[in-house]
Length: 334
View 1 (tube, rainbow, N blue to C red):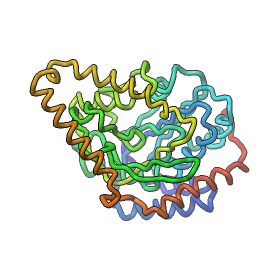
View 2: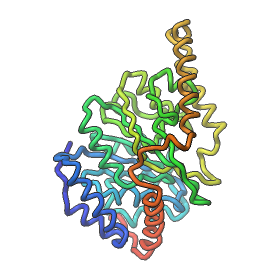
View 3: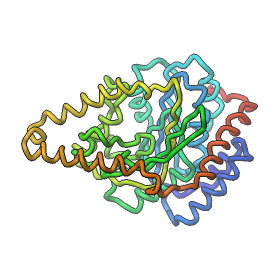
View 4: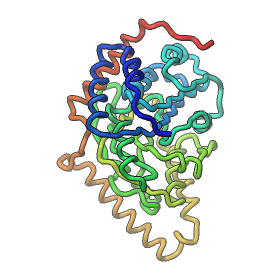
């Protein structure tokens, strides 16, 4: 349900820690003018969270500071016992919907969040990850320009919280098109935090498998490929994936176990067990492996939305914005 940009909404959002927000507001307004997009698709973002008060506010600001006029933002909290509720209540007026109650895990929380969304474009952003500036405008432009694109996945940044070190990576990890054989090759994983899809995709292959607690994203993207949805890779860095000591995703063995079970479910099909299917998998594995190693080559670079200094400025402003907003009074629901 596209609408025309609403300047009053972006001006209202600028009231959030105005010194930093106004700077990024000006940038995003210039994006709107230069992109010549007359109708912006509604983008729905779901953030699942549980006891992530240390990072949640920066995640919220990275969405709100996009100043995207046609945004739905939903937060599903699993009944946190830290300061998450205080943070969510502080931004109550800017959220489409939020709730804090026990759930059956991250997949259940995400499914519950999307049940409250009406957007044309959907995505979820975990409560310890961040969007980079200009992401939602770039996503809207890509989907408007290519009606054949069902799923858009972009490059992203790995951000080390303790050291503030970061580096870029290509879309789909290895930078190759996520055809089914590639996703079954163990060498290519889409960055969930930098991937967006049309509502039709979710209505066809959703909801997420709630028995999966780590690799629900890999399972979802495998289903997208299996149903023939068309992927588009963007060279632009759209999100930052935060790495830190207590991170859930650091349980790589559990992720690998779930991911492998998803992969084996497809590999047991006759079309993949046949000689031709085995050949396709072998070729895909070699292609993905080669691209994975090339991805680490420093001279290959990326096409970032921002240079390194600008990315550092975004991270610093988000941290300053979080600290400045601590003086705001929480806004409670009636």
